[in-house]
Image (cartoon, rainbow, N blue to C red):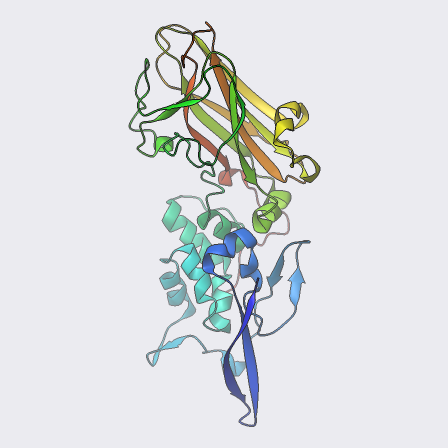
Length: 344
């Protein structure tokens, strides 16, 4: 819930007082709820972008306000210099600076600023011509990096929901048994050594990512349709063959409520599978690229499953670790109405 606070009474024409209100929200909630778009409500109307998103128009400054926010310690700072300073901040801190004044608010919505931040933080040679909020969403969240939590089982089964747990059920091995250890140079493992392991009948679990609760991301998905990417590493034992499968279920709002139906929604699924025969002890990566997900995407389920092929009691089935689920930022192409340049 937004909280309205009075931040001061400012004189206007030396005759009457003008009360200014700021609508406040904890910074940690800015990306998820997309309320950063109308944190400050000092002037102007809100421009409706979609059913869930409204962006505040940039403030128009009159002559008396041209230097407001550019005089610091009695020294004049050109906008170009101020943009360079702001470009060294974290994305979340840049948004906090929008509360300083109208000039700073406008600067924090500058495409030039966010291109510079993206260039510095991502070390990319080529920066796409996209609106500032696309860069902000990318730099302030994990949506374009990895939204899977506890991908190696280092927290046992926290963040996962088990759909089927047959045989001797899912397990977690602190170090893979009967196969090679996790490669130390793979970033998806985050330095962890553990992995999930399956049994002699199918073990299936999933992790859900709720797109519908993230209005800014939903808007970007609808407008730009970035490629959805999933991957995971799997292996088997030296003495027992196994089966592994990775699936994505991308569901519209009407289908997102019942976890038990996830495996039946073949219309919305994409899968990749692999087998590991005897002596297949090395870790192999499986990848999925999904472009034809529903227009009204509401929920994504990252589903993995496996079992052994020799029906051995115990946990001799496939092992998996290092799951990744993300949208591919580099796949976003500017839309016709995106401006290629922006005046400061």
